[in-house]
Length: 178
Image (cartoon, rainbow, N blue to C red; front, side, top):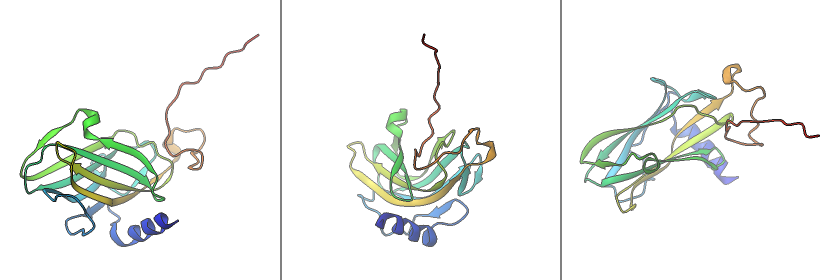
């Protein structure tokens, strides 16, 4: 639909192939502006990239410019499919990682140890709020990336995005009942 067209256009126009995006000049942000995301980069281990193999680590690193201290900031990173379906909602408060964000520049790093998403295109949305959860900065589609399945994925059968977007390890048991 319309979201997929918008994401496709964004992917062609705004995202570099090396897993980095300059966010400093984005005019589509909203919030008080007390702090603003300046850039975002995607890393596999320590290497910047925009294509990740299923099961590999993903580190999202963003630079933040703080004009006025916001106190204990709430941060959210949402990973969405190219159709706009959210598949991961990462929040620093849920991980016990609340920090006092002071005036100046800072770097925020979020790591997913094993990226367990179906093959396809994804985008990342960034949000930061102050102690009262008031929006300070919000950027949709800050960067895009691809997930691919390889023979090293460890799955006996490839994931089908129509049957599920996120792989969840599970334990199966079989019992014979007389």
